[in-house]
Image 1 (cartoon, rainbow, N blue to C red):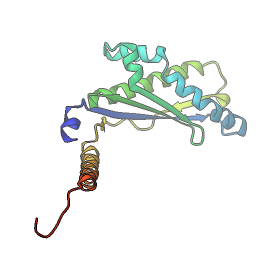
Image 2 (cartoon, rainbow, N blue to C red):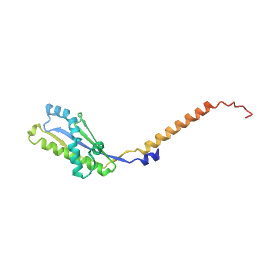
Image 3 (cartoon, helix red, strand yellow):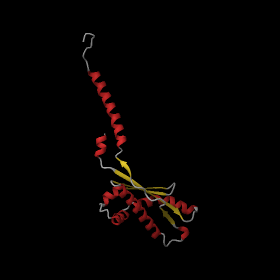
Image 4 (cartoon, rainbow, N blue to C red):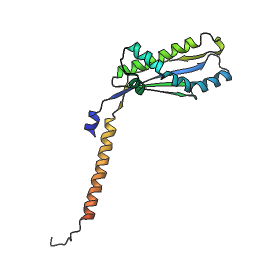
Length: 173
């Protein structure tokens, strides 16, 4: 299990959080925000935003590879868009998460230019993404799971051998 874990390419995860909030805290705007958050999260992971981020950072990654590394989710309860990026390099995961977040904020600002200030939906990122944290492989978990599985398998083999042993055992043997 240790060797298997060490042979795997490590993936680091960095995440950015975008807060979606109405400019005016009335019920209608708040209700609209809770319904639009999930759609916004899908927009962040669209080909347009991914291609723009790829070009801005000079990643030269094929779009399907970048799409596989980026995961977004929107939660209506706390009006939050979570952007998670997995990459073999922790700094690059952080750069991609930050670039996607800033690109979406810029796009949202342009979209809201012609809307009256009271009806705007603001998107903000209060904290910069941290450098990526090791997400895969979890060497310690794999080693413990391998040890437990090895003990169980060894015990089962010993019991099976004992069960299949049909020789007669006497004190003289």
